[in-house]
Image 1: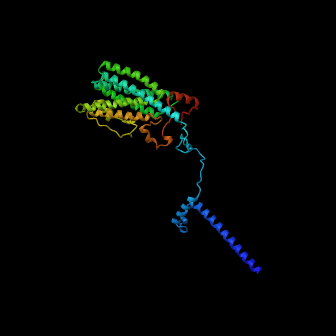
Image 2: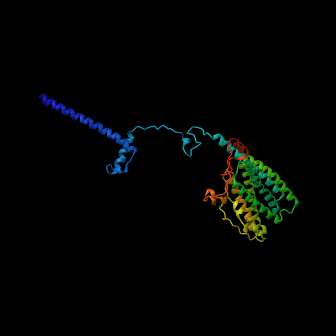
Image 3: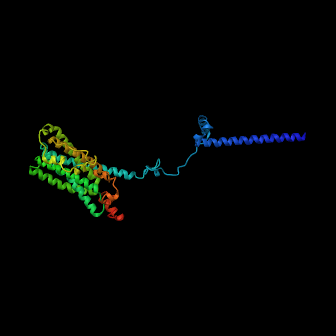
Length: 360
């Protein structure tokens, strides 16, 4: 009797232990499976665990789990593309500098608009009905900024501050285009009066030194001012074409216009049009109407180029894109470029930066 009671107790104990062990294993297995299935999905195991059952189990178990708070171990501004952006609730580091820059740009553009309006008033006062004389004065003024830009760029190059061949090429091509506009107006008799020549030349001299000073301090402001002048020229020619279009179609084109737009090497004609590829614009000149149409379109291209120049380092010669496929040894002499904007910035960087080598 004692022996049988002992055997019975031992069997119950073993059975209870086994049941407890299996229950713990089952719970542990379920807990492990809940974590693993909620984090990973192995498509190769779909044969042993049906996909539908797997999804339902993971959803149910995730509802019972506690949410885990992940602490950020990095600043959001360290992400690529988030430079300068602080975390939520924190002020941006460059807020003051960006506000100052926006305020500076607004002041520069306001001054440029006021200066352009003053020039327009002078032209309206003297040349309301004398179109060719007005165009002569306008073209004498319009080509001056490009001389000023090149003067400052050559000065920078002499000091080793800012060496950009594309800027010099494009600005020379712009001055070449404006010079031919001026020659056309002279052939049409726009410079026949002494007063017109006197006024245009003296405004140009004052305008030159003003743009040199402006470009040395802020190239962005100088380029925007030139954009305003070119925009006024475009609007003036466009209005003239609409008013006198029928009469212009009856008049022959000046010889200088025919030669410039249709004959010879048109490299410089393509060079100032930085918004379009070379050889994409080839004008036809059959009468005076075509001449003024092309002059108007030239002014529109100048506006685009001046707009591009307002972003520092953004200007590039249209012909330089064809050289991208060439090797470095075949691309010719490349002058070093110091990335500075304005004479104040150039002086500061020339003092703090080591001198660059003259040969790449």
